[in-house]
Every structure is written in structure tokens, then in C-alpha cells.
Length: 288
Image 1 (spheres, rainbow, N blue to C red):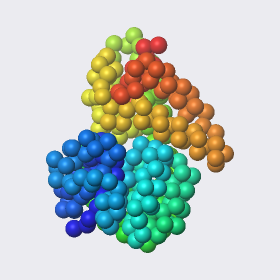
Image 2: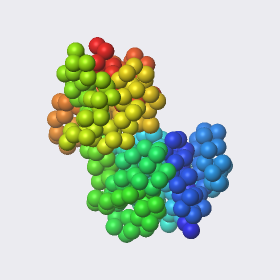
Image 3: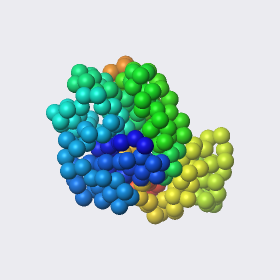
């Protein structure tokens, strides 16, 4: 049994807590808004009153929205005394931001691994995520047993920031896909082919991504006119798309398709679709 703290109990942080409790660990959770720890507490997690209680745990997992939130928590953890602890950041950040956070924690005497994950709440609860890790080999070796309880595959990719870099590459095709699906569906106008049939055939084709296999009915319902709440919604997709565009500037890459996709996301979100499934972008584009 490991003594683990999870900082950030949104949808994913809560799923991490439930999974790690299920696999026999002692879990403590903390969230800036304490009421959001309720679901994890109901599953058996202890609730820390402050971050000073968090540093009593040997391993600290971060599941936060952005670099500002992660940096703020890290600064508080350092102030509480983080020496000898292992911090695993599961958030999706820019690689440059991750490396900066790693340097601060290392200087304070902690170890650090960045391991953003591919997958949403359902896979997290089943331990079926895809883990992309960066950090020192010795730190990754300590993190791997716990990460393996959350992930069906965990890959150590290199030094700190490598996991963040890979996560951006993994999420970019998905963010773009909802745009290309709209173009594909537009070719069927006037054909009489239903959304059910089209999505079924696309799912079974070489062009069918996993998201259609996992969320086919959600996509069909959305295309038939009923937007569905998103586990990875338009706001989250745009956030990661924007991170990809920012990182592309740093490494000197050009992402013209991503830029156009970002404009489409912004229009859909302006029309109130922020919290809906990615397929709502497809429907929105088809309705123009």
C-alpha cells in the first residue's frame, strides 16, 4: 500500500482517487474548493485541510487546469516542505512550463515526473489510460508502479517535459478530427444516408479513430441535433489546441490546419458549446 496525495479533484482527479483506492492505496485529496473533494471522500479518500497535510504523503499527484494553478500549488508545497517527496504532474501543460516546474521542485529537494495521460474519466476508473512520462529514470522507476495502476501503457520518453510534448502531439489529431469529420459528413448531403449508418461505416473503416469506437452513439446523437455533455469538451480541446500552437512557435513548426481548427472552436464556443462533446463542433460546422 502506498500513501498517495492527489491535488485537484475535478473529474479526472476524482477518477484517479477512486481508481487508486480500488487498487488498495491510502489516498488523501486536496482541492482549493473543498466541496469538490466530496465524491473522492465518499469513495474513502481522506480530505486534507491544507497542503501541509499533503506533504506527509510519499507521493503527490497533481491534476490541475493549467500552469498557473500547478505553479501556485508547487510554490505552496515547497513552502510546506517537499524534500524527499515524489511529485507526479498529470496535467497538460507546455513542455517549457513543465521544465520550469521540475527545476523548482528539484531545487527544493523533491523528485518530479510529468505524466499527462490520454483518456477520460471512464478509462481512468478502469486503469486504461495512456501515460506519457518525462523525468529522471530513477524518479520514473518510483512513479511507475502507481502510474501502471492508472494506465494500460506508460512510456518513459525522456527528461522532464517529454511527456508534455508527447501529449500535445497525441491530442492535436483529435482536436483537428472534429473539423475533418464535418467535411466528410458534408459530402453526404442529399444522399439520404443517416448519421447512424455513416458513423458506423466510418468507425469500421481505416479512417475511423478510437473516439468513434468509444463514443459512437454520442456522435450520432449530436449529429442528429442533440448536443451531448463532453468528457473532453470543446473548452478542453481548444485549451490543448492552443498549447500546441504556442509550442509550435517555440520549436519553429507551422500548424496551418490547427490554426483554422482553433478559429472554428472559438466560434462554436462563442455560440455556447463550450461544455459539449467534440462532435458538437462537427454539428456546428455542418449547420453553417
